[in-house]
Length: 452
Length: 185
Image: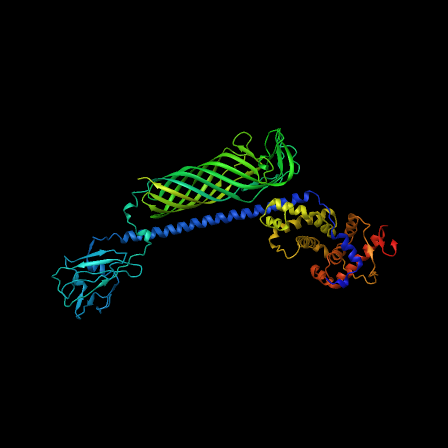
């Protein structure tokens, strides 16, 4: 600003408007609130889409992980068909494998002939007399990696040792008959057989793989985000209190809005039964608690002239004795409580000490009550149970989707972390003017007891 | 009353009660700003509504470098300019040479009611009204105004001279207009 350009004329106008104030009409704030509500709805929808994509991605990841795990498990199982006591012919097992020769042996490992310390040749194919045997020993610990061959000389080969080569490990012991004639002395031959690398958890004994965990009981708790996902049908507004015949009186200018998201938690127990190698069924009962904030500018006054908190969800109350009193905007805590009876099918992707499963199913949710509480404590709380004039349906259904990553901490105990989604398939509100299909994204912790 | 800093923080969190409190605190002051730029009270309320939505959506960007009401006023002005920008193409930006600006003339508007002053400003042609507000009341230079409105500095000056001349005529039509030393006109 160039002060030189300004004169007394400008100063007079500046002073005239400097601290001037004029009230706009009340409709301006209503319009602002409507636009903000629309924006929040858009943001919420974007968040829901994000979480849906995240859930889909996590399931795809779990499927990929499971597929890879299954592949490696199958691969390992195939390799482990040759067990400690399996006898094999040395040339049939050796010729298919890469062989290396330790110090003291000069021949190329891929050859069927190796040199001994005294420069004589040993033809491995000659180790195929009828009574010659080779014993394959898998030894993932590598404890015997450097085991020396004993009793070997030009005329006697007692054993082969097969050791770890990076990710592959096994041991073949060949016990030839003493009558095998060799031209020289063989001090050591090491043959490497490749086996796939496996996580330690997968190397557990297979003995208890299918005999245990056919029936279990679990205690669990979960916590996460909760969105009411309210949709207002045409002709109504999230801000306005709905007008309806027989509804609340004196509703001009009354409104309430919900926060975009709240919190939820649940505790419960369930029983699980394995149906097949990969499929299982789980069911149980749990307590759900969903909390969200409201802002409202009105209260309902009962017959005793007590002001109680209220929100638009209750606009269709038919009680003619209730009147509405406008107030300054205040914040309300709304808590919905349900008893949930979930039934889920599960698919085991990994079934080892560490387990991974996908769960999907339905839940029948029985509404217990809704409690509205004024955060400032100035107005009385309002509680509504199911049935009668309650705006909430007594029964609703929700779809469940999630994964469960578990770890067996003892033969009969398993703990798990279970991220999941819960989406109400029908509106939890009775009103035709507004529908609410709550979406819960939570992470649960479960403690499982496995029956013998 | 909630402290301004707390109010801003609660608005950033999206608390509707805080937004309402902020609106209640500043809407009257901002309404006058909008009235000055608009052609009518209805248009001013539209600007006010759009401006407050921008304020709440961008409250995170308020860093406290300036006063909150100054920051809000800037948003209101920008909103008003956006609303008026298309109209500017229709404004005849003619030079008004020869107008006696009476530099240094001392005037008093104390005899006028706010609504009368708003009505006088609103009666100005669109371009003149914008330039007058930006120069005389907000304190921008003609160079800055030219940059803001996409016009030349000379056009801004000519528009201002035009608005000043028109305002004096309109004020002189009111018997409460005083020029110091001359009494009421």
